[in-house]
Structures are given as structure tokens and as C-alpha cells.
Image (cartoon, rainbow, N blue to C red; front, top):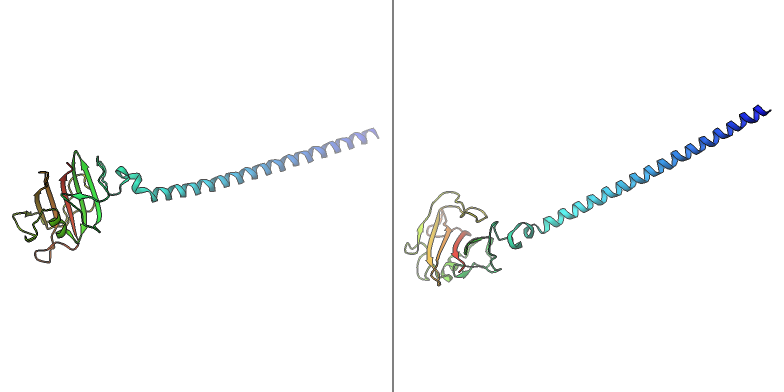
Amino acid sequence: MGAERATSGRAVSGGVDEVSYLDDVDDTERGGSAWRRRLSCMAVAVAVLAVMAGGLVWLFQDELFHPFGDARACEGSDTQLPGVIRAGGAPIPTGASDIHYFTRNGSAEVTFVSNQVPDYLRQAGILPEDKPLFDEKYGTKGVADDEIELPEGLCGSPLRGPVWIYHSTSTTGTSVNVTVEVSPTVRDDFRFPARTVVTYSLH
């Protein structure tokens, strides 16, 4: 009888231990599941933040990766030009596109694309009103290569030859050079629109 009670006691004790063990296993599994859920939520949050950060970088890339936060300024520029650029004595044409500039040690190089280059040349005093576009008193024929590199430091698309180069002097006595793309098919005219490069002094 005593042996039966002892055996019964061991059986009960064993059952209690087994139930306790199963409870521990359940707690561990629940804890693991909760931790996995936390990790999953954290991964989603990190992914969302990464997408948002990438979107912000794309949105503000011009401000982040250009001098002065100016998308027109080329790398290495040391002086910011105003919103309306006066290059060589006159504002560059209204509606000009693909505008870039490079400034260094008091000089500036500006490139833009416009169909109003003749008007700009006359407003700047580079070409007198009554003179033809290709009067050799005011300019010279440049190279006729298919692609002509921009001056060192100036960013943007290359010039397309042939080109015409104007040489002038500003009202302050400093030199102004203007290179304009010439039409390869229309006689005595620029490309339409034409890429132009203006080199001048800021002082």
C-alpha cells in the first residue's frame, strides 16, 4: 500500500513536471513569435525610412550636389551667379535652357541654349545692330568638329560644330568671348536653337 502511494506520488510528481515543462515551452515559443514580429515590424519600418530618404535625396539632389545649392553651378565654382545671369553686358535670353556656369578667380563661363542669340549679341553690344552675324570685324570662324568640348570646368553638353567666336570688350574694359553654334545647313545663320558659351570677367 505504501509502495502504491509512493508510486502514485511519483506519477503525480512526474505529471506536474511534464505540465510545467510544456508551459515553459509554450512561453518560449510565444516569446520567440513576439520577437519575430518585432523584427518584422522593425524591418518594415527601416525599409519605409530608406524609401523616404531616397525620395528626399532625389527631390533635393540639385541642392545637395551642386555648389551653393544652385543646379546651374558646375563643380568647383567659387562665386554664385544671380538668378538672372548678366553675361558679358546683357542678361542671357529669356527662356534659355540647359543653363550652366563655372566661376573661378573673378571670371565666369556660362553656357545656355536659346533661339534668341542674335538679340542677345546686340543687347550686349557684342555685335552692332546694323552688322551681319558673321562680320569678321567682330568674330572669327571656329573649329567645325562634330563635338567641341566646353571650356575646362564648365559642365553641360558639348558644342556642335561649326561655331563662330565673337571677341568683344565690356564697358569696364575687360574682354568678352562668345562662342555660338552655326547652322550646318542654313547659310549665314545659327543653329535653331543654338548652344552658346560666354566667357567674361565678373569685375
